Amino acid sequence: MTQSTARTPAPRILPQLDDLNRPFWTGGRDGKLMILRDRRTGRWVHPPERQALENEHLAAEPVSGRGSVFTFTVNHHRYHPEVPVPYVIALVELDEQPGLRLPANIVGCPVEDVHIGMRVRVDFEEHGEVFVPVFRPDA
Image (tube, rainbow, N blue to C red; front, side, top):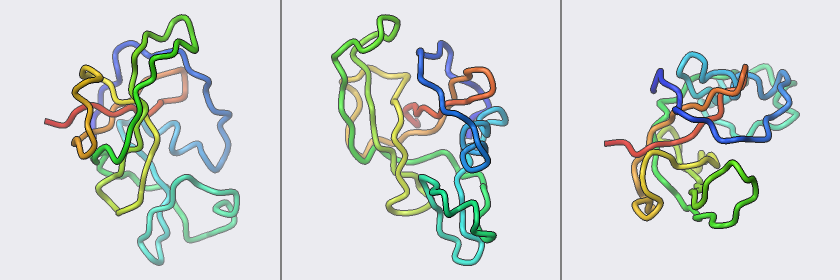
């Protein structure tokens, strides 16, 4: 995992923090991507669901922050005047478990270099107390 944060954060609609999502959105402060894990089965659970609050066996744990691009799209439409286009929106499959996928932006490389199967690692954009996970190429 990385301890740095992405240089210039893009304007974002930030989540409302609650007991269920707080570890995910604030773990980046410590350079950790936090995902819920069932302590009985070892299975990772993302995105979290409301019933997770009642499951005493689920706890947020750090993952490696490494994975690969499962699929992606390149956005060419300017939805916000301060967000430069084009940019990549991807589903990143984390190394910890097949099917454990996270939607995120791919940053730190030209959009034409992004490809399915590309190895990536997590980084974070700081927005006050929220740290948005983004992914960069993993050398």
